[in-house]
Length: 422
Image 1 (cartoon, rainbow, N blue to C red):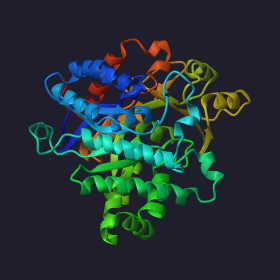
Image 2 (cartoon, rainbow, N blue to C red):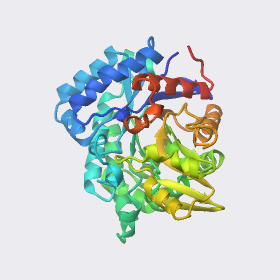
Image 3 (tube, rainbow, N blue to C red):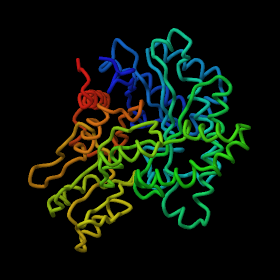
Image 4 (tube, one colour):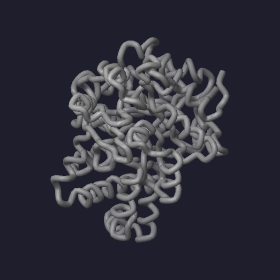
């Protein structure tokens, strides 16, 4: 089996996993992750063929590479020597992401702040240097490939509410980042797509909200005119560049938590013309019947590092809670609802997470439906398994090593896409 350039629905698709599952903030720590965990996973799932890497780089690690071209070149050579290639970066978490409370701080700096622009520009420079040269023998072996960088969906919802021109300010900052991506192409570099990732409790929670923002603020004549001024492109070329470099990262867990329909979300994305530069293969928690026993079974998932936004369905209405403890507190006061979905990434191969009486499940049914449709009509060339919560999962769900769990997730994904397994 190989994970690079899988033919899915007649289109080459690259599958990987995101290294944000491994604690690593400095460049030295990131390299150790690649040299140990990534190589171990490759040995299990793609020992005789190249494997893509979904790299997570903090601002600290990124600046190390930017300030040391020799280190960047050495890493590029290391990747080729080990038959690895980086094609996508997770540019969402700017700072520390493990071992300490992250919660809503993970969104800062956001797209209202210039620091987010600078960080994204630096990530683009790193990715441009790491993507295989299509003219080289190695690049020909991998095949034509663009790059992608996933990023924060604008900002945290509360932040936008307190700023009168938040949407315009975010759009202006995104245009500056796009101008950098255009300059990379002008200099003979690769095409890189910047992908905003809708997430619960952010200013863009759903696919529909994200598409609406593109239509109203980004894919407009005004934005094309601003980009033309920044880059020197003519208006038509600027409008085309916006659609070539600015799109969406669709996270399956986030969409499922928001009770989206795979059919409707994919149809909306297809008809909107907003490119999907990356799809994150992920699953969250689901309580189809929030009984007292089922709610009690959630207690091991209450932890202090990440936000676990919870969306409770009550008839046709959705009630959103910032974090799981907030939802449990509301339930203790009688506001239980009819179904719960929780932003807590669990291994994608896990369906039922508790005994049959508590009916405590994952959102894997949504993910399976999504992958089944993607196997027929691929919407993105980049697929990335993302289960970053490994360190805070209840021990009952960590019955193997992290490397073995990742390999199993990749195999599960390939099976769901109808690809051959070993």
